[in-house]
Length: 441
Image (tube, rainbow, N blue to C red):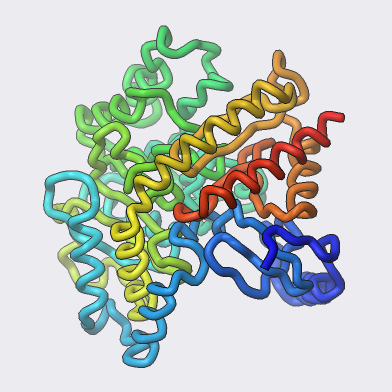
């Protein structure tokens, strides 16, 4: 099979039929490209019209081990034949307990951990909200502008990424105060790192806690170690450490949302490890299940509810999803995918940096490991976002055989599987560069 191979410009006739049915019967969500997948293996996706693509989206950073990894498929097949569901919140089964143990031991920090299993990153963050409120008996939270923690009404109160995500849903959960994130390319304070002395962190303690977020009423700080939906924003060195110290000094819980950054995506098992930070609560999802929906809030054991029924669900820790998660973790560890993410991430960074130097429409390239993006601007001086040119480049990319996703206001994110073959990644980047080049003519 040739990869990529575009036999008919997408969407082809079969794809158009499915897209029409989808539009008629499914709720409007966030579709970004007219790719109708039929099958996928590794880092290759085939659509219903016979086109093949290099996948730089990994199912929104879900397929860290690649599509249909044989060990994951076998684990799912075996578990499905033995036990598919038994409501692990009300009863017991071995694979769920073993997954909980594994996550508790894998999470950063020396404190004993416990795990609440859920179905999505949003649910994991909802659990984190309740764990924090329950254990501290406080109701407020600090979060960051640009954050994405989910779209259900509790998690939505923490989210501050795009207007469309909040519009017409007021009021959500009260008591969340948002502060600017460490976005050095577009510093809201017009300062420069490192002479700023991390002003964007210090102001939390100096101003916000003395006015609108008193520590006596605040349960914790929700933070993405690298902002995802908000634009793949990587804070400068020392910022996350400073945030952790502010939380500790004021007796707040540090809640790290690693739904997109977790399980090797940034070149570490968890992104907080880049700064040696151990959060009180760690939320994970996406790549955990190897393609099946499963999530977790991993937290300091002293924060546990201790009362049956304070929080629960039906499908969290589903037997098949738990087996898939165990297999995916085996693959990540046995095949050295965390190190591979760091290695390939450096190669991708070199290519994207070279593109930034070549093309004026690229305002910034940033990322860690295989979590990277380029931000497109109308001119380098004003840094005005240019979503129109971004969208045109993305369209050109899938028409030439590379699947990617938008990011932030005018960026494209590159998040391939952590085991993508070197030559396939380079071919994909060649296509990206050609598409950006055509957009500048």
